[in-house]
Image 1 (cartoon, helix red, strand yellow):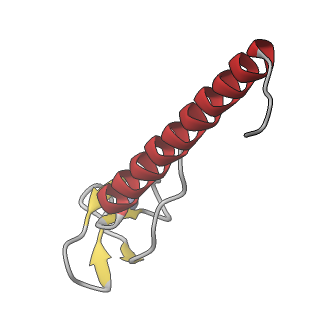
Image 2 (image 1 turned 180 degrees about the vertical axis):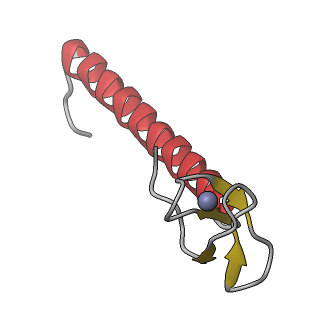
Length: 78
Ligand SMILES: [Zn+2]
């Protein structure tokens, strides 16, 4: 058995706890980004007026505000 002092054991426990928190945080960030990506998948940003509207399946759609035609592309993050 490896001889370990109490302070080393406490430090090891704290390091493992911090590592666990880091992993949980990374998982939470990954899930949030995934959900945001799904939400933005159907949104189209108008190139003329800048309005953002929902487009279900068409590749080219008309903006409900100004009527200009827009190609489906994911809007940039705010
Ligand atoms: Zn528009």
